[in-house]
Image 1 (cartoon, helix red, strand yellow):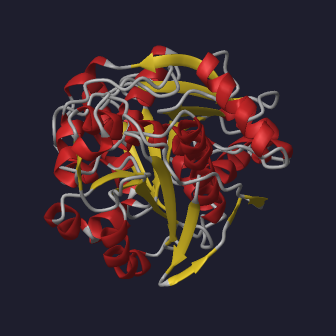
Image 2 (tube, rainbow, N blue to C red):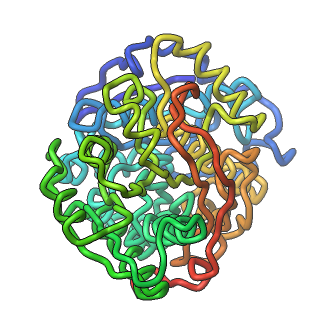
Length: 421
């Protein structure tokens, strides 16, 4: 597979997570596609030639969350290399083209015209604010994009396919699970430590809705995305009597909160989406994470007994033996799986244009991920593709740092909740 990296208008070779990318041939074999239709009979558009399909990734490869962006890109790369080894899609090899937005909205806005002119769609676009900033172009040019954020505000873009449960539904499911586990009850208080934008506000929306539904008081503490210290926020939660702290943040603040809770003897459970890496369990925060944290995720742990997860883990270790895997790598792999399913459906319909991809996307009522991802149904524009969540716990013995507690958890309230309501 050919992998190209663009930053602004400069083309350079990229080493994904410090490992050189092996380039497979981008020349497709002549013959028939997956639907047994001659390649010439398939309608094509932007990003598609007789022998290649260009698929884009627009993410942070050198900015503040570059390790996550690189892991996600590597996961997508791994899937498409496997797919190309099987013959690609529609008699064409997939060419993955990566663009570095440095997790900066203005960079995404500047890069998007180049992206838009080169690829059929984006299998990974980070983050939510970046996607929203170019939503008019996405809508006008009918580009299918898979955001790497599960922010439910992205449901307002008809061709932005969130491949899982949005953060607010994840939060509702996580709170419901903790109520079932007697960690929280009606009349109790929970605290939300959250960013002022993006994931923070979406998690806060879910916590507010769950609090109202379950009769739980919600107190709110804001934290900056750049913060590494959350002692004041945790102390405020303790002063409010919160039995659960819900984190609407990245992993850095979750690790910091768990450490404060553990060190101060605060009897509280921390609930967070899984942005914890195995590396965090090799730090002094290990016991705090093991004792205090419950995680939610759209992807099963890569160290689970699931055969597809095991196959991914083995492939990752073989290709990147010196690089710790994170949840972003599994997500990148699954996102590529989903985008591949859209391409294959469009090929069956003999329409590899952007209109054809939209039609294919809306016809997908399920995606076979081998159980790597929660169930997905993209047939209803504006509605979540899933309302289920995997419940995880940190695990020092797992190579990706987490273990599965319960797969496919879905609270009754999550099934009826409407994002943005």
